[in-house]
Image (cartoon, rainbow over all chains, first blue to last red; front, side, top):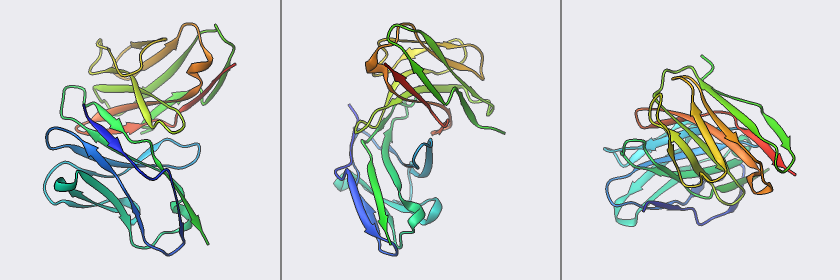
Length: 114
Length: 110
């Protein structure tokens, strides 16, 4: 069965500092991988996705993620965090089956301090 | 193009009451989904519909029913609400390998 682990429940960074959010997945074949962001009281917005090809993917809002098959990881990074990046971030793994089962991690809440 | 819309945004029910959460998408997508989000648990799939006229159970279907009324609309019904169904409910539709989410319905069952 597919699964996603986000080991950090809560992370605090200073504005302007770099950010890395960790994600490890379990999936038998080549996975479809996603990062979503959720601002308080809002729905989920897709930041970026990986299906195949270049293992470093660029997303919106200056985020990027790197797929490392050997480590079963898909960590999200941003070189310089802005106060508006404070939100909850979800990693997800999807299959290519008929209905595309997507399994979400438990989320990492990001706090940005001035 | 409104994307995925959900009504209502907020709802408070008493135990045993019933209600239907509405979801509609205007992107002509075949697949639609209902998730619930609980603190510390991410999103869990309740039901999905691969196409108009078909529905299937997800991870946590107990206590829920769904209707895929047409290609646009996918509703979620709670026949007899329980406090354990207090949650935020998200509807999503899918195109290719990407899911698009609605803004959510926050449901409290007292």
